[in-house]
Amino acid sequence: MHSISKRCLLSLVSLVVPIFAAGQCQPTTSPVQQTHGSTTQPQFFDEPKFNVAGVTETSNIGGHGSDTIWRTKESLAKETSGLATGKESAAATGANQPSLEKAAHQPGNFEANHLLGQVLLNQGKAKEALPYLKQASDMNPTDYSNSYDLATAYEKSGDFEHARTEARSLLARQDKAEVHALLGHIEESSGNPLAAVHEYQRAAELDPSEPNLFDWGSELLLHHAPEPAVDVFAKGNRLFPTSSRMLMGLGVAWYARGSLNQASACLCEASDLNPRDTTPYDFLGKIANVDVPSAQVAERLKRFANLEPDNAAANYYYAVVLLKQRSGADDVQTTAQAESLLKKAVRLDPTLASAYLQLGMVDSERNQTAEAIAAYTQATAADPKLEAAHYRLSLAYRHLGEKEKADHELKLYEDLSKQSANQAERERRELQQFVYTLRDRDPAAPQ
Image (cartoon, rainbow, N blue to C red; front, side, top):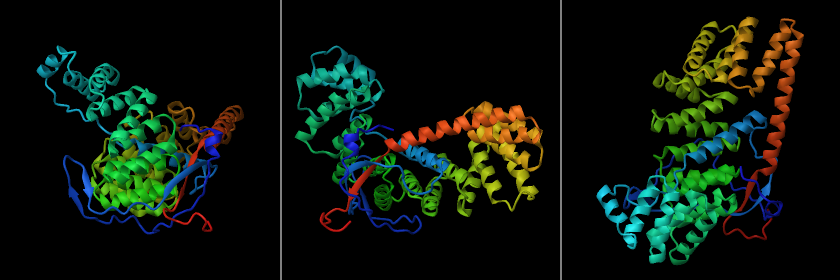
């Protein structure tokens, strides 16, 4: 999370919360038409009705209150942002070796330098591409494709100042969506989230494609503006109802707002679009880990376990669902099924600390303290910072009368909890909450 200066934090303008539909996540189809390449362009685009106006520090990002759930929201928002695919270079990836060799022998040729730069950029060698693209730019500074590739190479090399300069120079010549999207990447990487969201918004206005809308929504979500993120992802879902990641973004945005039912519905629909895609299940599993899962969530996580029997996370998530949905500790059959899944999960992934923790809790229910201690110890070995494992280990040792060990584990738990609370507070102080106003609203109207 990027820090932000106090001066920027004080740039609060106003805050108006738009009214959103509170129903379940139901994608609404909207007519679309195919354009060149793989980009789809909607025939009608009803833009989200807000404008980002500033940022402000916040200590409460809404929704559920516990640190565990807050950290889950943070994790899901970052993972959602990770689903965004950065704008690919305009270079063709299929340049053949003879063409490259020919280009290498023409150092004074614009096309040769551009071609070499393009190919290196597409191979992930941005720094190696820069000399060729800069040479081509010196020969023909007005060529759009080379200028775009040069800005992209600067951005991927971490030279954000030159990337920004090159991209803004491009915009002065052609106000194109892909350049605004690139500027969004540059500003986000530079730690300027407000500037980034403005660029992503402009890109979506010029070209409301699936990637541009997703970038805009995920940027809002990443910087703790769940309400407008819901608006953007909902528009994207209506325009692109078969986009799984748009549904995932909408689900995580609803969850960040504290709307568990809507979040679950969206993520379940995302998993239904492509049942073999593990990402929606992972989001559902993380939510189920801290909230009581609904019947539809349980059904999808059961499907995940059936489809991916050798996936440790799939076995773990379904075990958690079973333990939460059983009638009680005396539900022996369900408990045994969950225990079997947890044991399978740790066999598949011996580093899955949370699964050891759950196994220890099952043993504790049965008053099998020695077995519980063994499981909790494995959990702390797999993840020494897992607070709950140290706490439960302390209880187990105390139950056996081993006060010194119990006190040691309790001290570890308290130290970790304090560190976690301090870290959470630091992150809360650094959170950027975008401030937005309804478009075309009278600024003098009562807020």
